[in-house]
Length: 194
Image (tube, rainbow, N blue to C red; front, side, top):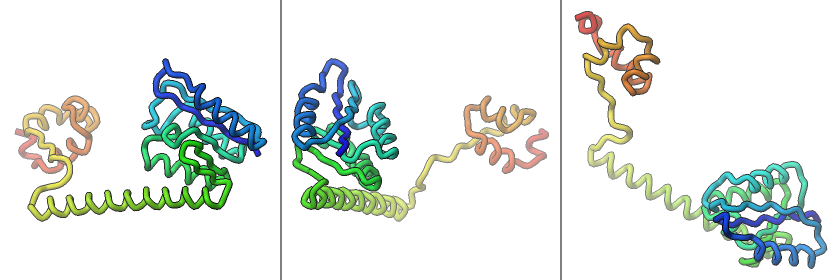
């Protein structure tokens, strides 16, 4: 099997060598060949990382069969991104191994572990959505307006920029084009002429 080894360190003064040594030993013991993807000085909270992006592109090109990481937090610290990434990689037919957590999706037990983790992540996402909906309902019930505050333009600003296009007026006033358009439509022509 062809393995992709992924290692990451958060700061540029750190070295990924501890991770790489263990990963190389594991891959060698399994009799796999390996390609290494290393991100140096990149936070795991970031969804986009140079080597990780290259790894995903290579997975789409079927350049390896299994992704091996030292620990899950090396692959990502954001649970949603981590679960999505693992689902995407598995949908491409790539197995997953995390040495630190003992997850080996080349086995039935490892796939079960990953499915349980995915189910827990999905449960947590659903709970967060429930809390958000409950909060929005509570705010609506109290009569408060949701969303951005309404942008009101003074009549003087509308008159001062009436000769400009909507885009030019928006740029001059520092508001969106839709605010200028709504303000112009809501004003009576007589008010603009005075």
